[in-house]
Length: 324
Image (cartoon, rainbow, N blue to C red; front, side, top):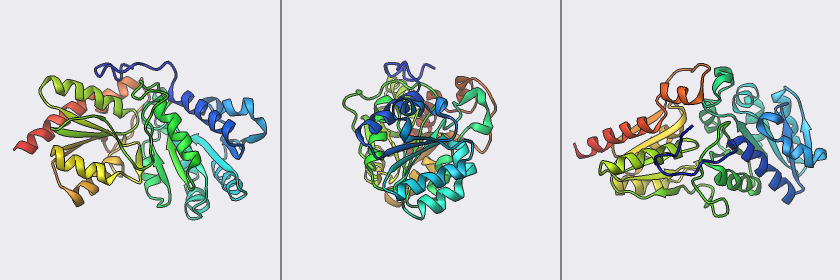
């Protein structure tokens, strides 16, 4: 993948799932209350890093997601900080009732990793792609929802989620993402979006892998004389209402970009905020009402219009609507 090339971002050698494993091991070393629950996918989610160093704090529950959540909630009730881990699609589609009852309604201090989110899971196919996870988690009022965009923000997000008191859902990706932030100096505050590029003509709001794509789009737009502000909306809930209201007021147009269904995703929630505070022209880049197929991640992103090219086209439309 050449994500971030136009913006001059430095590639990172490890997939984001590997970075999650490293970050999880770091918080386990720092906090003896951290325990990890695995759905027999430790080699894919990279929770195996914790198993190798702290086998007594690692529990492979097997391919039984409902039980996985129940055991994790029980450990949280005993004062531990459980990380309940599996693919996003498996946890939310197989164990949603348990997440709702045992974690969300109880407002218990459990953390859920939804790994392999989006369509960049690639050749494993649509049954394992988490394309509706943000919408499903958005239906659970007590959950904080985090979507880191690069290696440094993944480390920061895992630490912030572990330190936070209450239910947290963190979405991870299978693919490698370029470096947006310095590894030793990543600003990350739950509920506060990061301005990763300044601009006055429109704002592109993105999360996860689409932040690098948004920066690529902004670099292309700058060559056309259009200066785009880029917001990394790493927290989907609580959403940074102040940053969105300021973006609408100061730049006059907004494009959202997410590797998720448009229905119920980040963009639809941003539209609600913008409509309430300062209505402006908006365009939305995301997955339309469709399931995808198995394929190369780059090919899938192109086919389903989730690239910097698509963000650039949407930005041109939003700016034209603003001046028209």
